[in-house]
Length: 420
Ligand SMILES: Cc1cc2nc3c(=O)[nH]c(=O)nc-3n(C[C@H](O)[C@H](O)[C@H](O)COP(=O)(O)OP(=O)(O)OC[C@H]3O[C@@H](n4cnc5c(N)ncnc54)[C@H](O)[C@@H]3O)c2cc1C
Image 1 (cartoon, rainbow, N blue to C red):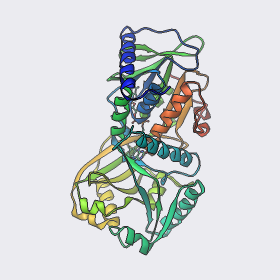
Image 2: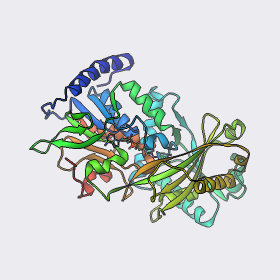
Image 3: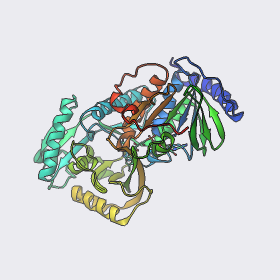
Image 4: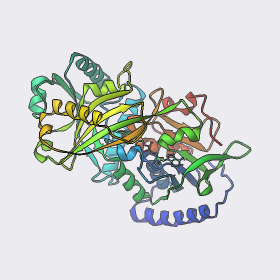
């Protein structure tokens, strides 16, 4: 069912006040065996939880989100925002990213994401033999999935991108990518769907009935019940899933400059160094070291530049350090010399959730008909959040999602057990 604009908001207002009353009474409702749940509890209000809520609400489901801090307070609020196929590893992640970007375009077209999604190309550039090799291999893989890629020799690249250093040897324009700020997407999806977000409420564990179905979530505000539960808790997911060793935090540090409109306007898209592909492990066999640096310079609509960043497996705090800031700035100025003339405004850090095999966990938990997980999106959750939320919403309503989720099936880890 699709409900539009005004109707959607007022219908949801009625439903959300009903669900709030139910929650305040801390009732455990009898479970529906109908494939489409009447009510769903989502744990976590990052982009994945918010998108799942949005698509469930569009189907007429009563949705409540449990959030231990605030919407977009974790990785979603500290991300770069590349909605990009360019950086994805060939295979299921690249295929999913294609669907992810297509959905952003659709949501821009239907007005859902007006002003929030900026379509633009990604220019992957190479400055060394190793980077040229990874770039050529990667461009081939992208083309194999049907992505429009144009290889650019040194002279053409500099002509298109005068801001680039002359040390850059070659580049590839990956067309059809875009950019979106995670917290703004969350805000829009929540306000359009009108779902209830219980802020400052922490989910402790799931409560199961004798038949193994999940009947409630034990939280800091008592037991909350619903017909189905979605765990979209990022780095909070391992505790809820009892799965130490399957997911790990991966910190990233990013920088934002002041506005520099002329330099910004001279850049026809974001620049990603070939080293970013290596640091992210976007090519098979690439290693992620304890602290990897991969350069991305994104010209924002504000006229500022967002510059990233690190991948760090040794530290899960949202902190910055001078060594990282200096390293990122040195790399950025080597790639775009004009950045040396503008001021750094701020540095920030966020913590991604990485799964040990490099693929997120998306789907129904084994043996649990009404429990779903969507977590472990590492550095790809802004791109994939909406499309994965849409897929989980379909699955929770008993439908087969249009995106093939088999590679992301949580059942591939036999150690997953729900902390009930
Ligand atoms: C530095 C950096 C750069 C990035 N750049 C990009 C990029 O360019 N492109 C891209 O696509 N992705 C990027 N990402 C990745 C992206 O930000 C994440 O993959 C995405 O935000 C994950 O969304 P999520 O909803 O799964 O998790 P989160 O945003 O982490 O949200 C999970 C939420 O669950 C809540 N929670 C956890 N446990 C509980 C509990 N027990 N009870 C209640 N609430 C709980 C948390 O408070 C949090 O708000 C980047 C990430 C970082 C850190």
